Amino acid sequence: MSQRLCERRTGCTNRENTTYAIRTKGECVDGDEQTMNRTEWHETWQRLRERWSEWTPTKVEHEDWCLGLLRYSQELVEEVARHVASTFSSKTPRLAWMLRECEKRVREESITRQLDKHPHFHIDADEFNAQKESGIKRLEETPIDELRAAFDRAKVKHGDLLQRPTDSNPRNWKQTVRAAVLCELKGGGQS
Image (cartoon, rainbow, N blue to C red):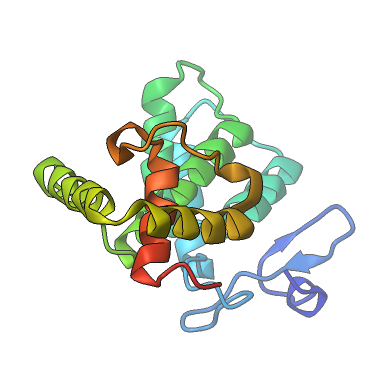
């Protein structure tokens, strides 16, 4: 959080009596809409205390929990608290357990969002084999001099990635060689 926000007198205080900001409704800390506001934090803190009724956190522990969990949404912290309570048998919660699980879920959600942004490409095996056969057929129908010239152009572009085929039958070539030569024949191998 920025120093200016941390010094406001509206939230958790640390050992040096610096107050850390908890946003009020509609205000965001560091542009993150997923942080809790003051009311949400106090409600969440109360539920955490009720969930582990034998736990009596110190003022310093309260500050640590406040600073650690503020960056997450109230819903996420509640879900994680339920998970931690059902996973660990301890009568005293650990902030590390909560933070680890919150970070794990945030990462998973981020990955899911990224995957949703990009279209999923699915190539049918039959379609792939048909395209492969079409390419091989084109190579087989091409005169050997054109194949050699196309390989030489591809070799200049791709260097040691391509090894000259020892067989004149394109079916016996490595896939990379077939693809590079085919690209050169189609004119798509331009840099």
